[in-house]
Image 1 (cartoon, rainbow, N blue to C red):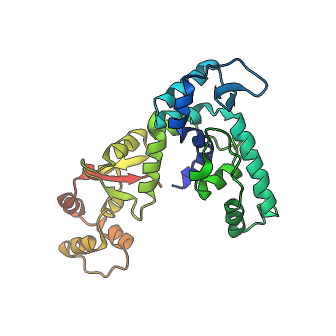
Image 2: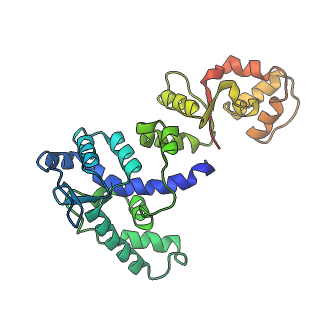
Image 3: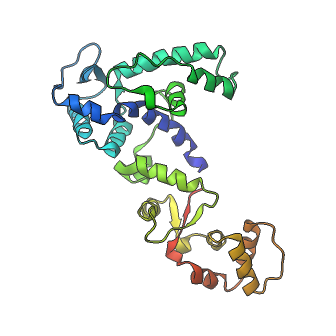
Length: 275
């Protein structure tokens, strides 16, 4: 997962814009009556009380249609790809950033984690723009929105989005991180598993491995420690093991381990996320 840490940080950009999309039902009620306007100093009208800059009329209409359909994945993809700047939202967040650093009372590099959490929790969120409800944004997302800006050099690239299934990348990335953050990154996922289709996508895009493409030692780690001890006993391995990695390493060198593993799980049902 280390290779994805910059990307995980940059998801704050989506969180920043997602407050627009998070309430797409409310926005959708207003869009039909709001035409795409020509440019004005504050930007172009996106919906009542909300302007957008750096977007063509064609893209504005596309975004409005996505919102009207209440297509959350489509909106996430659109926001990440085109990175529109919503004027009132940016102005509002700029005010929150000013509050945040004022409450922090010191450079962020010198502030403790407790200082930062306290500063975020004490922000005044009352004057949010119309159609943007900040009340359900948790403090962690709010802090990301304040500390990270759209000018971040860690951009979500097209290649990254395609690695996680294109227009479904936002949901797929959440599934991927959920699976990769488990104690065991080698997983048994049978055809009926809720995330089987996700894992097959990740295999196709190269960010996960399946079956025999996973080294045997790592395939063996899909088993519990007790299962591995039982296999060691069946293979006449007379040795005491202190942890799962040690016993898997030993068994990976033993003839017959692959066969024993296949008797428990089908090879094609074993997956491993990237490190």
